[in-house]
Length: 416
Image 1 (cartoon, rainbow, N blue to C red):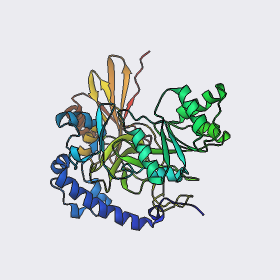
Image 2 (image 1 turned 180 degrees about the vertical axis):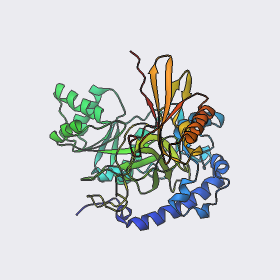
Image 3 (image 1 turned 90 degrees about the horizontal axis):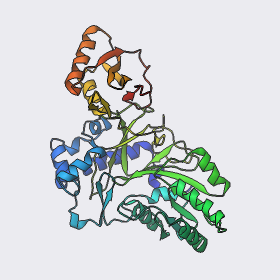
């Protein structure tokens, strides 16, 4: 029989949705009351009215890309924390720089669920190669392993030969880290005459896991599964045995929205991953835009995964939503395209294509619209000038002809 971390993973979808929306109302009320940033941006929101996904979609999106400036203005966490600094356990720093907290709750980032799905069990030794320096990745994995009752070796990164020796000495059964570093350790172990035969499972993150590399590990008796998370949000989704997609964590509300915008995308279409963490009283992130692209597996809201878990599933990591491009010496970003579309509800979808050669840029907004008359074309061109402070062309395209790849801005210029 399949094993699950808890009964939440197999509850009926309608029961889950009711519980998530109830938790959303509580989380927004808590954030407004205790986090200065959310007290401001959610000041006109009545938490009691947040009973549907549509109500959630009306809330503003806070983007990860904005955190550096916000934290500089109000250090160290930009006022997004509901627990004062003295009540937190750590403050970390990721590139940007962006600061992230953690609190005193066990498994604060909720990684244990992904580890359990990857086969980690109580009493095992986890060889953790994520960094413990500056960034929280090492601590994220360690607290998840401890929640399961595992012992952790804090290997960190680098020192390859010493790590090979530690693997040979400790004989761990489980690995946490990037897939490329695991491959490097295994290869170096063979070169040094100290092959590692104890590892049977791994939870990897931080980079892609191509099918060829997964197969390489399988040939060596190691089952490797991926998790998707961030230093700000913790676990977002994770792989399971026989799953078609990455199962979303039970303590988050995940939306796929138009890149750079706020409107949810239809199920199955690519967009930006926006996450609301529920139950985190320390850092209550509401509609947090990750900048990552993904899509919800079609019909996964009504069809359980082959592993038996009933939550919605993501197609995996499909790239970055930040498509900022410089046109005629000025930056153009997806948020500006979204601003133009909001002015013209007749436009169902759009893609800004930049063509030409170096120094001779041509900017054209390709629009899938309900009408294609000269009046709308002129109005959209005027909006482009007002929003982007650049002149651009407008072209209407057949319905449904725009690529569904999540791109809002395409740089098609020639530089040869």
